[in-house]
Image (cartoon, rainbow, N blue to C red; front, top):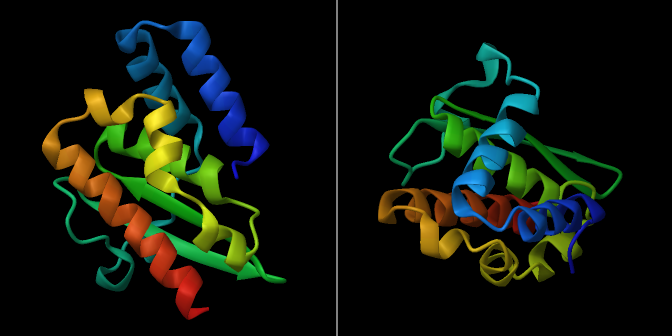
Length: 135
């Protein structure tokens, strides 16, 4: 299961083909995201396991999952935007049903991110799943 926003990213990635263009696109997605207010950049919202500083602020309304996020690294901010496209608007059971590794593999991220970035991406997915499971 993937949202239309994620499908749009996957389609764009297919169209771009070249990884350097895809990398730039991920950065552009991050730049287009609204900034997370500094008041939410607190230890409780910080994602552990990321080389960069990453904050995810979950927002659950009417049983639908959403989040705001930010990072001090542009590529990581872009990865947050990709995860937002993957999860935003889903019900909590749908969030838990998402096969994030398979979805992200469609984008080829596994092959083009450093080990540290891959670990950080996994940590963000784990945080999202934990929040959904506990809500």
